[in-house]
Image (tube, one colour):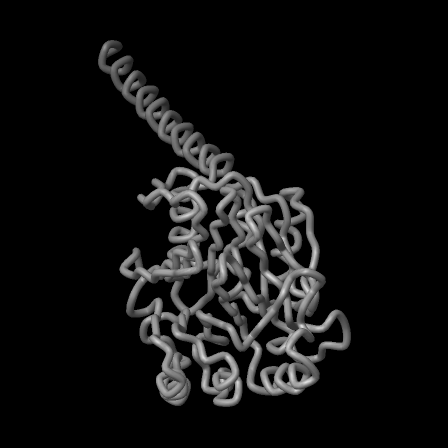
Length: 322
């Protein structure tokens, strides 16, 4: 009888120990992922090495959001917007940045909408970010406050971009801000940052969410002189735009006919999500781009889109991960 009781007690002790070990293992796993973010363990995308002297622009497929990565000839990278912060968007961006293995990283949030800045906190957690350029026209949402808190927690320097500000590199590449103005903005979309990127004789206009009203305003200002947007030695010639990153995911309320008549881009890139509820890109916008003679590339159809610039020429390749 005593032996039977001892066996029962031993069985109870073993069950308690087993439960305790399971609990400890679960706590250890939870602690590990608290200390080491899940996406830190993600494998890097396999990306061909950049050729010497080449600048690459990557328009990432991040659903109904924006993320453009400028990979400079000196090895640094500029990330312009960072998707909406969803699991799939963050995963795509993290894996891609790991694959680039850049030497230094600068971030730009062009707009205070979450589809532009959502992934910035995750990038700041996982990568060594030197500077984060925040929208000049902020937001009062809880999500935006979390963005500011995350950037501050990681210790990255912060700044804003407005007209005549320039991000330049020793290679001669530069991104000049032509909009918004430094002060007096009242519309959040029109206050979003528009950048004119130049390298080796090729010009790319990177539009955020500004609409036709801001386009008409820029056209009126340009009528005062073609150098109105120049910043010192950094020339901005909108009429010499080769590639247009289309505003507001191809919305009907941007990329007007007058704007396209000035730009006359040979290629247009639209960042949008497959089957999105906004029906972007709009049929009217696609028609205007086609009438302007632009070859259209869409992330919902092409996946990641890469522009390689060198020696005054560029090539565009598609077919990356979606």
